[in-house]
Length: 426
Image (cartoon, rainbow, N blue to C red; front, top):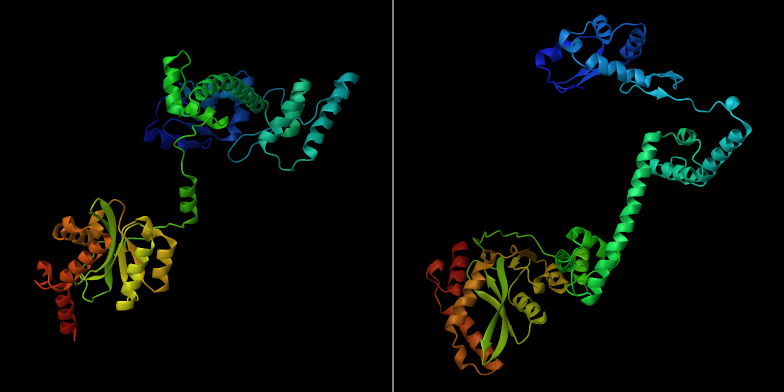
């Protein structure tokens, strides 16, 4: 590895050398056969530069730090501790001595040696054959705590390196210190949370801590509150909404129409919607079903409450008057239209359901315009009772269908426009 960058010309030159495996603008990967040979040549009183000159490397490599650094690294690998060496295609691996030399040990050391071996095999006996590295490290740590001798032997038995074990040990110790710190912070957070009777959420607690000496990050506060079950009681998420989403009980449908309101045949594309009306300090609701071609109000129902029945009755009333098989009914994403009873009613009668996009009233615009005109033209000041309102709405819808001409429907009434369409087809 070097900080200097090689040009494309230099890279091509280096790749031609038989002792170079890979080369990029920053790195040179040497082949395995050069490593052992170069260390032997260096030990026979040749300098690092002379060794690299022998392998026909160019001047910008010979005069750099690469020869000295790479030979020093290779010599470190090939030392007296290793029994022999071998290499694979990619990495130059080392074969380690599996056992200690028992002949050089005294009686006490031999006993300890076999005891440690037995302990390790006892720990791994009940577990799976292919243990993960974390399992193996945990077993070594358990034995290593009791007896610090022969750590090298344990790592050989587990087929892991000592440096990895020390890294694992450090991580475990850091986690223990983190838990100890969290316990101290938990006591502080608990005191503030119980003072407010668990009404303060994690942001409020972080703001209160910010004013005191114990400043903490809001993420840490939220994590501790979650671990020790100190989260706020108020303003929790509704679990039933999540259940509805997962079970898809109240599910939405695709926007099939996509504002394509033009159609030649009547009663094949329809709109439905709900609106409210105020009369004599009371409130009523109206549900309509409107044809997309002639703009005729096919059916309507008025209700004093928002129960589902009056929406279902509008469909049932229209179903008795006209054939709705394979018709598309466009609605918004209100709870009435996502209800399973409404969905099943349309499914049983072979009606296709379409829904407008969220917060987009333009997908259902003609129904909104009808409600706007109706509220302007009905004299709601004169209405006293609910029955009066019903009769007023019935009269207005009859007037709208039969007597009120529409500019965009060739200046005809909705019923006349529908009849005119049927005549032209025939």
